[in-house]
Image 1 (cartoon, rainbow, N blue to C red):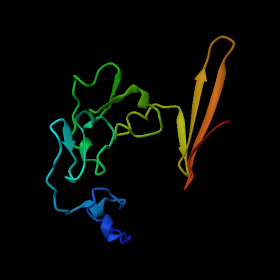
Image 2 (image 1 turned 120 degrees about the vertical axis):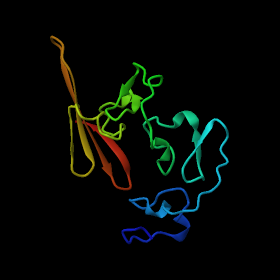
Image 3 (image 1 turned 90 degrees about the vertical axis):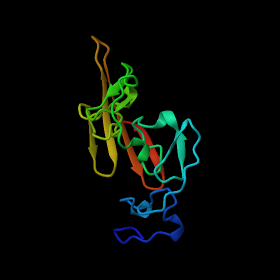
Length: 154
């Protein structure tokens, strides 16, 4: 059972995959002994291993998110091809203004010309201005429950 009272199957408790919104089904679990190879990072659950270079890359690769905890900026990894987040993380520049909080402090989404409305809908403008011709593209992306993401050009 989740701490908010939501019931989940017992087999989901301490399976290394958070099923409760607050991850309470993965708290206070016995730690399994890690069997990760030398070039792998053991997730905090002790069940999963990820490729070592995926640690602190701005994405939660471990189901429990432990690969993104206690990360600090590494000047060797934060090259000019990467974006330096306000909190010290480095992410690929292609993730700036993509509608997702890749920096975990939202600094990669702060100065974007986009708006997010109710219902997980994201609208993003992309303008290209040149002395004629110029174009304006407006894209709409929304999530329809159970159907995945839908994109359409407006």
